[in-house]
Length: 442
Length: 137
Image (tube, rainbow over all chains, first blue to last red; front, side):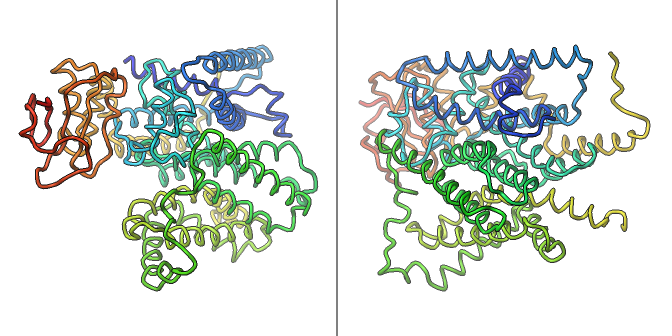
């Protein structure tokens, strides 16, 4: 019973930590009609950013950042209580059915997670070890003593913080944050189209049925990348669906870069995924050249910042240390030859078929490209697929590790996290079918 | 203030939703899992998630921790291709001791460790299949 209560309290804890006051919400979104899920969507990204900043100032044995987090928690709690009280007073307090459904799914999946406590292979070897550095009172200078010090650590730090602040202190309470973020991203992407509540619930159900597997939450960081990439494509969609020609660098771009910053601190390959995203949206003529240059500059600053901090701490800044050490231009054809290309293609095909959401997004894109040619979002998503394919090919072909093994252990995870860029196509496809009145014809 | 969540015309939708939720519950063994959450503590569920003596062997590690009342970290040598399970003893003290754990021990297979891999060099304190708690002689 106590464990159920603790799961519920963890839900409250994460919600309060991620709740943002109206003013901050309005700073990032021009829309004044904000429901709780909108607020949480902004809040969870800000929360990750705050945690990243706090991880820099955390020092061995010091409790300062924990006190700061308690202050943030109390501050958010006051605003949440004030907002609820005000709505109740104005008699505008309505039960948000979608949020209730969110809570319901979170509790169900939390119980699933509480019964599958096995941590994955890489998670035990790398991510949990990084988490334990913080749990044992260490700071980010101690990360250089962990295996794969070239891996970023934000996911492990979040895991530590949320298990530390939980009632029972078990490690899996930290991973409940991953579940919360995953669900929030799915609910968020399902809300980009204007549909009735029941349709939205069904859409969420379909997406979750296609994606959810308990193994996604066994400590691997791909679920964080996947969820944050969904939020990233959503922000991009929202910005571009409102403004046809982007000339001004408004506050939503700040939010976009806070989000990008969080993503590049999750995994090494996140940087490549962001480059794929940026290159694809830069193909759009709707973005002013000045904005493209500014976005590139901001991204470079974020990368340099990460590089500088890694250098300062003494962490390795190689991407995938050891994975590409034997590749040279002189032995190019030892790496890129017919048999290796065929092998990589085989794995891409089979693991893509294994990822139904990925296939569904791909099919949706093909249909929309054929029948919805005026849609300005088709081009960037086609290029995301092409660049994504190029990334899979080059990442594996140039690997110095035994190809069969590296494909076997990591291709499915890479495809999964990259599919975060495409999931938005599922609700867009549903909207397209509705616009074409396909359902009425049936 | 009174709220009416459902109108009569919403009942079919509610039915569909309930059926889907029930399918989901059955699919993920939800009722069994909620029962286990009430009847099994965290430690039991953690041990059941892994093999007792195989791969990470968390069950064996937990057993010897309780049986020998161990409150300090013991070096672990794992002979199978598996992550190092020393994280399980993370909350224990780091003090010098003469104990060592061999998991999935195989005399024909050598692993990269500073410890002798010959069982004759140790006193066997506890054994279960190929998992050993040893004392360095």
